[in-house]
Length: 83
Image (cartoon, rainbow, N blue to C red):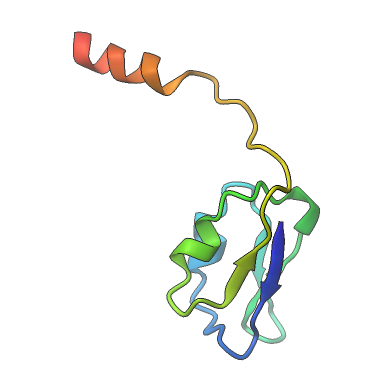
């Protein structure tokens, strides 16, 4: 789960909003900075924390697992190799 957005560091670039697969993050229309609009939906994937150019986001581990994928990575890779 998203633990913190450091509003002093956040530059409002929107990278976190773009990389969030769960659509949790928004850029506030009042402050122009990132907020967790749907904090409970966070997958704890760390994309926002890893991609934030200024390190303004901290994610707390072990919120919940990502939803299951519709295919396995091994199957996907083997299909590409066999083609």
